[in-house]
Amino acid sequence: MNLLKWFLSGDPKPRIQDEAVVKKMWQGMTAMIVGYGMYYILKLTLGVAKKPMIDAGFTASQLGLIGAGLLIAYAIGKCLHGFIADRCNVKKIVPLGLLGCAIVNVILGFTPYFYVFLVLWFVNGWFQSMGSAPCIVSITQWFSKSEVATQYGIFSIAHYIGEGATFIISAMLIVHFGWQSAFLYPGLVCLLMAYVMYKFMYDRPEAYGLPSANEYKGELNEEKKEKIKSTKEAQIEVIKNPYIWLIALSAAFMGIARYSVNSWGVIFLQECKSYDLVAAGSVLAITPLMGGLGSFVSGFVSDKVFKSNHSLTTIVFGLIMLVGILGLCFTPPGHPWLDIASVAVFGFGLGVILCFIGGMLAVDLSSQKGAGAAMGTVGLLAYAGAAIQDVVNGWMMDLAKTVVNGKVIYNFDNIMLFWIGSVVIMVTLIVPTLWAKKKDKEVLENPSCEK
Image 1 (cartoon, rainbow, N blue to C red):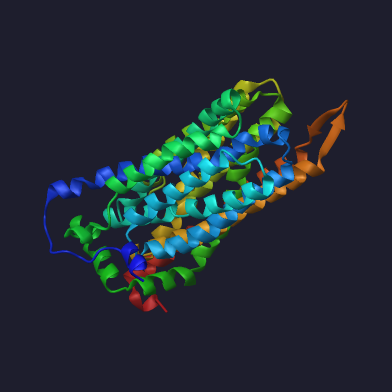
Image 2: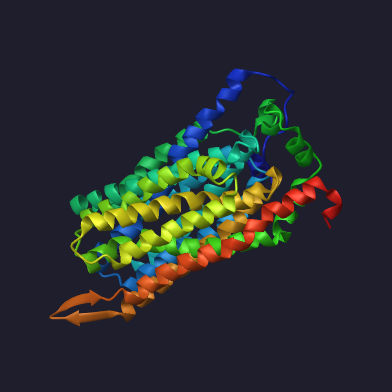
């Protein structure tokens, strides 16, 4: 019981108005960005290492099951940790998760066996789930309602830093030291990074005697709404909101498209377009670079161009993402610049919609006290979709395998349709949410409308 209490958020302290303490939140933000980027390096290595692991004796179906194991654990854990983070001190949850991931990856650096790898990659997924939702809760605690979209976009750079580093650094480690080194060396680095996160992250402002973010920024209406709701009431509101579940279902198909490219894009370029490992990893590294740019400008674009209509922003950039994946799939071999352009368009569109489908659409329809629950609900379905894609992609690869003159060849035709179809469904499911915010505003302006 004492151990569980250790994780709880601190009790409010007497109010102070120390500007120096307030500015320290940027240290916490920086620590989250860098640390959560390292989370991703320990999460995506399998996608780069697939072909060398197949050459070492693993099958595509086995790798699909291993990948799905992480994502299943991540889906369940993200939902649970989202609800927990609304009540707990994220300074203690997030670094502990990174520490667990680091230890698992170091062990994987010495593990060539399928069943051991399957179990440990599942455990890695559980520790991975201690990162995203608690970090978003921290952002909603330290920034007012009007600032959250912008700060969420800045924070989202984190996983793009991690993705880009994974595609390039992991490929280079594998080429020079073998596939197991791509798990071992990043794991060792993250043992230290976990301590850095713990050192510089922060509990909620009230635990330091500071006003809440909404109060500090003078957003009194938001502050009043938060005070009249308990955390439990806010979380129940999330569960009952049909629009949040629609967003979550869309997130499931986003997870299919996103992780299909992340996890199978490298081997797709190797098999279908004759890239070598480093070249394929370098092309795929454009995805997180452009995704980071998309995330960074997402709040500005939505607020200034689309007048804060986040659903419309999501639909438009979902269609841009569709153009990118069509180009990646149907550009013939021998046109690397077209592949790069397609990956860049896909990544930019994905970067924008990840901010909204991946969190902001649901958080925007929730109170601050239910932000973790909203993130957890969306994350549950998003990573369920991501887990499904690993199994389906691996199964379809093995099913389409042929041997020609002693060489194994994989046909990706059905796999490409699976990727494209998931993007189409993802965009379609967002359309009804165009009316969600309108309904929310009517309730605020006329409380008698609420039932």
